[in-house]
Length: 160
Image (cartoon, rainbow, N blue to C red; front, top):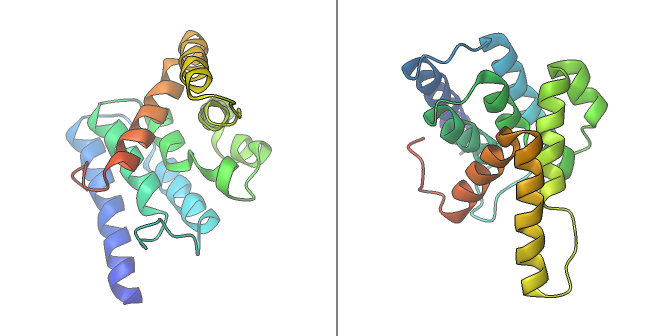
């Protein structure tokens, strides 16, 4: 069973690397691989509600971003998008390992989902407000969040 999971995870990262090449995205592959390793280690032991290892989700999010032809920084942030929220990884660690841009994007995605609401309408209005504010600062935050939501809607949604 563990061998099958490792094979599945390995296939996912390989698909991501192929998608980056297929879309001619200039990307520091060592940086990307380091992001995968850090994300994988940070989420070690975590599972999705389906029972799959959690790391499948960030790889799928990064795949969606690569499929859309986004830049390497955004794809790396996609691999790391849940690390601040769901692990012990800190903003400073992300900044030290991946630079200010990646840390900013991951932090922005994390902050989009943090405010509690009293009514459904208030939640919808606040979601729109946060999205517009994030778009004004850096549209890539929204692109990562949308890829995250897309993959969470249906685990079969991407080609990985």
